[in-house]
Length: 239
Image (cartoon, rainbow, N blue to C red; front, top):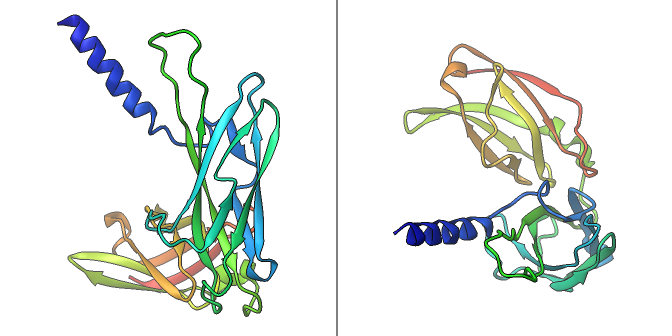
């Protein structure tokens, strides 16, 4: 009985290890937190680094849309599977298929990278983590109006009621996505699993109960093209 429980426990832990995610655990990592590809250039690249001093990894990569689907992505990723030696670098190329994306706004995908460690040389109960990390890929057409770093200053805000809840709505008139670094209402964070406001679109955020009464004081900042944080913006609105 004890042997069976122990076996089931090890199997369960092994399955959980396959889901380990995060760049802090990864030996192989991208050297930037995001990639910007200009359609006029027809391609972009992401530099990868193996921080391990003694382990060679296989890396499998693919692209997903913001809903998590890898179907009908108009970007060719090469090589999708490659080996990277200790303390070495590798480059992923992203080739944009012509005529396949909107020309009046940028499009965003996830670049997902999973490192595959070598199998243990000696059979043991040691867990082997297959760590997965991801970064955003912004595909940007030529000739878009405005400056992407100013997009956060162009947002329009309102509150609304729906389903018995109060919502904060961000409306983005620009052709660039806005990725929030911070977003607080009356001192309460309202960032959830949707931290980006789409280009020429809107996103809404549930207002915490503590911040749902009286006037609303809004503070927010965004992540720029280089992974840094913009200046904090402030706004007042009726709640």
